[in-house]
Image (cartoon, rainbow, N blue to C red; front, side, top):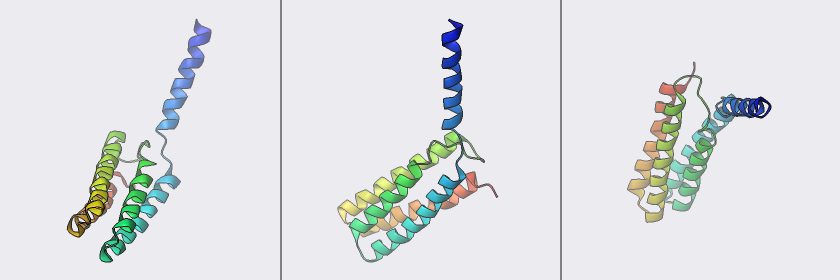
Length: 127
């Protein structure tokens, strides 16, 4: 029985450790993508190009979803995941505004998405 349980226990512990690891390069890549996509969203909104805005919004949300499972160096893993979930919800609002071709709602969603940079840096950025 011990021969079976020990490898299973080791596997579980290793899996838990790997899942929560912080990958600085991946997070930096996601944050740089956020800046690029925010600029693209604003330009698309200025031109009332709802398709381009929706693509930029989704690219930002997708990039953040890719780092959701990390444990941040500052703050909590739960806080990190909740913030990313809130960002993705805001992205859905922005994509919905694109579908409705509502420039006011789109600009509001872009402002909300931009506010996550300040919120995230305040809560999670290590200086």
